Amino acid sequence: MFGFSGAALSKIRAMQNGGKRARHSVDQWDRQMMDRDRRLTGFLRGQTDNVLAPAGFELSNAWKVERGFT
Amino acid sequence: MAARQPRFNQQVLIDTTPLPDSIPKVPEIGASSAPLLSASYFIGARCKAYGDDYMLCKTESNGKGETECLREGRKVTRCAASVLDDINKSCLEQFRAHWECLDNNNQQLWQCRRWERPLNKCVFDNLKLEKTIPGAPENEIPVHLRKRQIFAHSIATQ
Image (cartoon, rainbow over all chains, first blue to last red; front, side):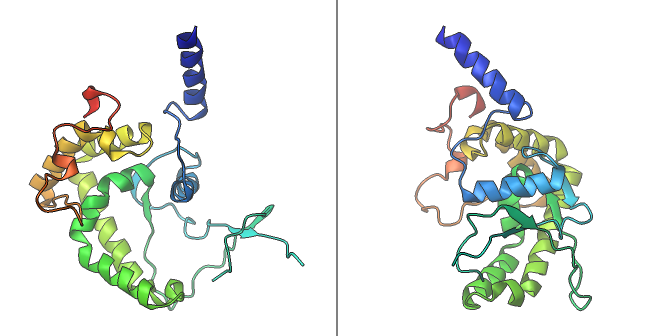
């Protein structure tokens, strides 16, 4: 019973992650790198081994905008 | 630059103003996180001087490193791009196998030693770059050369 639910959950997680195992213990470095992957490939878990970045990659890093607190 | 990391943002701003023409244009590296991690020790082997220069510049610039260390950063980018280019040309199969394993295993290098050994051998034969872990104690076998990885999930991937 646990085997079935465990297998089903891991299948759902793999579907959510593009066929790969889910990432765990993700820290700020990993979040930054995954955001860079999303800017490079379009998917959060997408990977590519091109040498040069696509055009416009230098300008696609977003500033996070906060409203001022008073 | 800013006092703290932004936490409560609801909007993002994408600034599409390009850099001024006085700054030489170097194309950014197009490799994502897993291939970059896989090639990182080889980039370190070839680009150690440029990397050390860049880190020294950032440490000494007291917070202004983003604008003052662009020159060293360009050298690092060009060198890393050259390493990736060479690896793609000579060892593509082993490289792809290694970083696909890393991607499946939460970017943990110790789960993928089985694919790392042929990659290290191929890069050493073709590019003469050897992976060394800086700061490892001298009198022990380095972690990547040990037969048994104590934290790996399964014997098959060690």
